[in-house]
Length: 94
Length: 474
Ligand SMILES: [Zn+2]
Image (cartoon, rainbow over the protein chains, first blue to last red):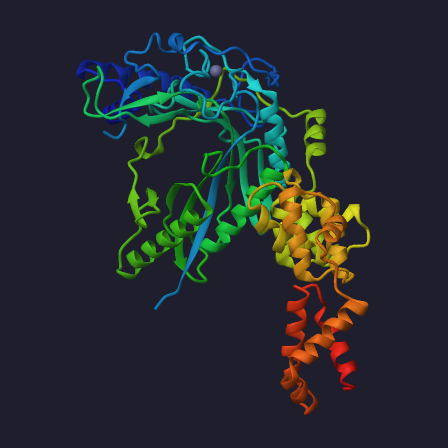
């Protein structure tokens, strides 16, 4: 069971503001997901490597060769706030 | 009173000297106008896919091997999740439970792990203006975002601030030698954090550790560690307890302050990066990395000491500044006659002060010319001080030492010339001659000094001594 505290903690890490009703609902939904995962623990997985990737491909590498970059005005075009040179953000400390 | 023993581990971030970023084709840049080296991948746009830079993996393997690590047969990338304006995706691609390399060693310190990751962007403080109407604003420059990084974590094997500095110098020299990074601390291509705790001497348990962040010079690292060890000692002596936290050392005031944590309790919620497939170094990749490794500084210093008879200090100086070692070996190879230890001293004591931090290979002094010069001094064709004059000329203009000696009449006075000079010295110092004859050996100094002045240092003191005694029948 995912309790209220845990939901609020995860929401804070994800920068989500949840209403009381949403906290309630998330608590139930997340618990269902975890219960589902718990069921896997019932299987005997002795000697089975953890699956990190579902496709069996390795070493997809790119040669170290430069590709064109975005013009700055294009890079900044969708920024909620910008100067001529960069993305403006609230100061993290202040 | 209890004696405390510091327990120190270092965490080093090295920017790799690839041409492009870790997961996109943007060219790396230093000092380029802000936000001119970006693309949808390193700006974290939705729907983009990272692709790993082969050269970054190659450099990572070289580092792992140079640090004597076991290379993971298969390692994977993870997402390290946290929100910060310098991280556009909301996570950093890093490695977690299966790093590229582990269980290595450099010198007397064990290496815990070596892993690949991407650098964050740069936040520039922008004051309080603009549309946001917040009190303070920052501007993000994403040029640095996505630069390939290797993180090196040592085991807590270091016991003093001085040892930390020394070890870091060895690590820096090693990384520089293998050519994977500029390792410039001021420019941030080498960054160091220290994990510090103290415990009663002889105890085998660890105390509570703090993390001292981002010190950007060797001196600051040593001073920062000393200050933090002292702070922890005074807390424990007062009966208090050290709190686990991240700290900042201000080198101008010596003050240590607590940094606000980026994320609650470092809850990074790592999970495997689904957009990147595992790295499973092939035999060819491993072979290429192995072959790219030159002789490493620690081994080179040992060889200089053992095979060439250099002192430990000189050997280390030459080996840790690889370009000096190269120059020294080139000079040694250019002239088989020269005595290695003497040549090494000329490089470290005379050449280095004349060139400063510059690479001697790019100076006007040819390795062969220095070797020849050292030989001229050793053979007493010229005096030590004339040799230094010749080196001044070589450093300023280059050229051939023998020619400089000839053009400037720097050859040691000898034969009839020196005999004549000694005779004049005897005539000019009658009092000293009497004293010398009377058994006062020290009096010879005045006579030899006169001869040295006459020749402007072109005389061999021993030889002048001999002639004086011969002429006086002593
Ligand atoms: Zn990019």
